[in-house]
Length: 252
Image 1 (tube, rainbow, N blue to C red):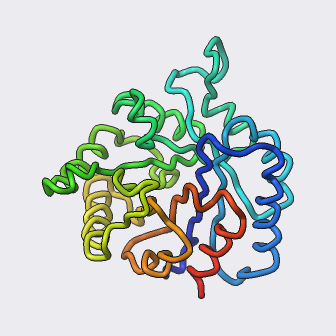
Image 2 (cartoon, rainbow, N blue to C red):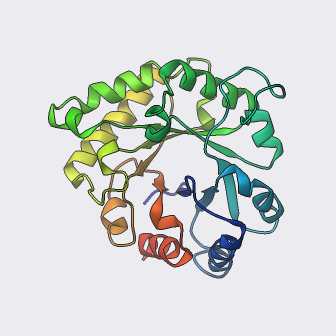
């Protein structure tokens, strides 16, 4: 395990109502009482409907929060019904924004939009959680490295603040399926990503997460991935008990 902070990022997707804050409060209490000797960042990315609740909580807990998406238009305020800009997200208290998730790509988020969003986040000093990953067919055809290279090359600008970008490797075929890549496969992917980002973008210490069916049972194996800075967690983060078990099992 690294001496740097390990990320545990909860992506609630289109889930969560105000009464679910009792789950987050349980996690906050746990973090205050236990494992304080370890460097970690616990982040929740809730639906926009819960941002106000997180804003109130942000100052009194060890939990940070982010948004699941931002607008790709180059305006901070304006006539964009249903959108939230990097600036608005930042003013709401968010420190992170998920960009390029496969569920967004599936409904039309292309490289051009992703590239714009990464630039806007960089300019707003908002941390991007930039998702990349291959399909099962691409994996079977042994195209994973080329697919990831293309996703990075077509989305990243040279003038970005790379200190504010967290790369999240999420094999699409693993998200929500319970199917996890084996250790050797993940080892090759993370070594490739680490080297590619260092060599091509001069990032000294790339922050790379793993996401896809992370749970309390497999976290001990997943913590052995080289160059892994943490985890992007979906369904297993909805209930405090499951999320706490993931964090506890990582350190125990």
